[in-house]
Length: 320
Image (cartoon, rainbow, N blue to C red):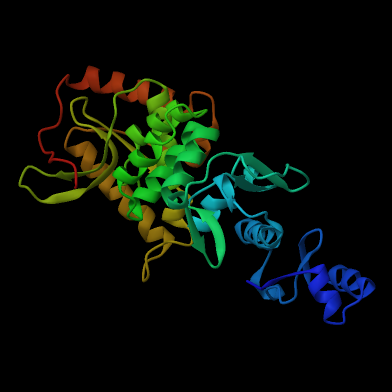
């Protein structure tokens, strides 16, 4: 990622406004926002610009113009911390400024006035950014429950302690959206292996289903491991599996093909069924269909009741 330079800096170095405009049109430099340029963008062989990279450039172009007492926050901070975010939220840079400072939102910048204690601000690549815990809470307060849960799960996987979330939440007792953030904190689980699994769990929770075990280890009658269930309700005898693109796309383990991963998934699913589990499988599109998750789970629970009314015996406790 190239360094961001402001117009005044480039003009002082000998560029002219006409040269800058001509270079942008030719694709030789990138203008992430008005008055800011990247002189060494990635080569064309890198493919279409990644939207997260584009947003980071937009942030870098904005930060030099920040007022004292401001920090990158919310979705923009989530991008810098490497948390999952919905791409639809990347059009503007999110900033938080202390209420004692002045400023306003305009153009590609969205500014929130809120207290910024020193221990709520850190630095990433020289940029003032809300801490990981403050970022998770802000995203949960102002965003949707599903993406808040995805961000919180990911932060916990990266080592964020729940006590850090609790400390931030205590400082926001009467802030807007804090009840939603508390709910996200309660439902968060680092065992979720991907943003899609977090979003699926949000659908399950919002629909009122019992909370599932995540990555439940399953063994056969002889105690031999069969595999891990993405979502499991041992007392109902139901397993839900999620097929995300990360299983069959760029993150296929080294030395394996997408086809081999698919076969392994099928073998594991058949083994679950042989032990008496009812297995229901979901894909990414199900997350966004009305009743896509809830309908499938209702049918699976009903089938499990008809089949046995008892849970499979060959289960173990959830992986810690």
